[in-house]
Image (cartoon, rainbow, N blue to C red; front, side, top):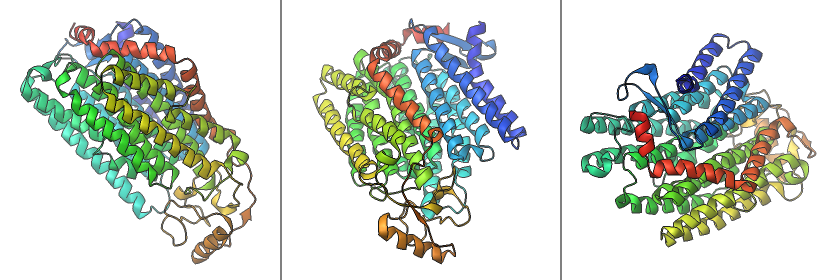
Amino acid sequence: MMLESALTLFVAVPLLAAGLLVAVASRTRLVLSVLFVVLVAQLAAAVATVPWVSDGSVVVHQVALWAPGVAIPFVLDMFSALMLTVTSLLTLTCAAFAVAAGEAFKRFYPPLVLLVTAGVNGALLTGDLFNFFVFVEVMLLPSYGLMMITRSGRASVAGVAASRLYISVNLLASTILLIGVALIYGLTGTVNIAELHGAASEDTAVAVATALVLFALAIKAAVVPVHGWLARAYPKMSPAVTAMFSGLHTKIAIYAIYRVYAVIFDGDSRYLWVGVVVFSATMLIGVLGAVGEAAPRSILAFHMVSQIGYILLGVALFGPLGLTAGIFYLLHHMIVKAGLFLAIGAIEVRYGPRRLGQLSGLAKTEPLIAIAFFASAMSLAGIPPFSGFVAKLSLIIAALDAGQIAAAAVAVAVSILTLLSMLKIWTGIFLGEPTATDSRTLPEGLDPAYSDAPGIPDGRDRAGLDATGGAASGGAATSTVATATAEAGAPDPVMVPPGRRIGLALAAPALALAVVTLALGLGGQVLLELSGTAAANLYDPTGYVQAVLG
């Protein structure tokens, strides 16, 4: 009983630590020390939960020891254990990047990160639909704060619009989610996921109410056709926040889609064709959206939409192979996409946001970040020996096994287009001769697009600079920047020769995740077996239901 009750610490400790850090917010060294102690301890605890449920068992704690059906159940199985481990790793990695980039020194950044962590952990562990909604809101509210405090100086019109869009869409989705949960409660008298086992497959009214819940989750997961908000909002956030959100927010919604369909719909085969069509369209439309983008983070945002289609195809191929492939793909994608955002974020912190072609030759001047980006990019495209190869191959095999030839063909075609897009970024930024850079656009530790430091042009609204805040490179860049800054009353820019500017601290987070994706590719069998255990609990949720209901 003591071990089971420890599950609540995944929520309680970050919440309490966040309150403590607010009280001592002015003591920066102490605040950051507490943040990393909590995040490291959480990662260690999350890793320890994996062998605890490796035999397929389900661990349940009824909060406050109330009777099952009355208490809020905290439930740990292999799926939630793997998700806890990866989300903990990503939160820690993104926090380390935020320190190197200077974002973590913003007042209240550490406590807000801990509040997000508490919400994520609660959403992964709760066995109750209403409390899932509550924990999602606990995750989202501090996220809005993180978006605001990491954008210092004058905000661009596009940036404000993106933030407003992000908040509005999530509030709308949360409202729909709450309505769906209320309808389920009105029809069944419970919101306990275990008690709802099979209810949607047996009662059409419950199926409609649960479909409303799935629709809300699809909005939060950025599934086509409700995906546009992500592609517009993510590129306008600060680098550290973008990377963290990419690994947490949409993935919590995907986790819930897997759980709800497996338990409440009991994997009902009558509706799976809808998922195959929608998720295949998400794969294709996402990758095509990336074709027309010229800014690296915008390209990555559209590819994020595309990869969400891959992940959710696993639940549409409902079976042991499909679920295993989908879960493996989910975990792989969380690591790789965060790694890509961190690699591009490191470049933006030191060189400013640039469009493709405005900065070149980084493979020569920044070999560490070039290696990190290349490894994660090849993994995203599904090239061996990285984890993306194992993920895509497993998913295509599952699609063929389920007779979904068209979905398998789309997956292969989208993989080729993804590879071309990654090569587009690679050739646009890393190849060629190094570009001379305006020395005043290189503040130590802060992305100039988010800085109000004296003499540094904001750029995002100023004539002569591009929409992403970067100046054109080469000879034309000198006159363009000079014109814009002269209008601002700043001194003429000084063009400095290219040189290595991204230090080890800034490159290390992306490098670490690149190493992880390589390790998961070379040792993919281990994660496939763990994903298979998680899939077995979803394919036959009887053990989950019995454990929760006692």
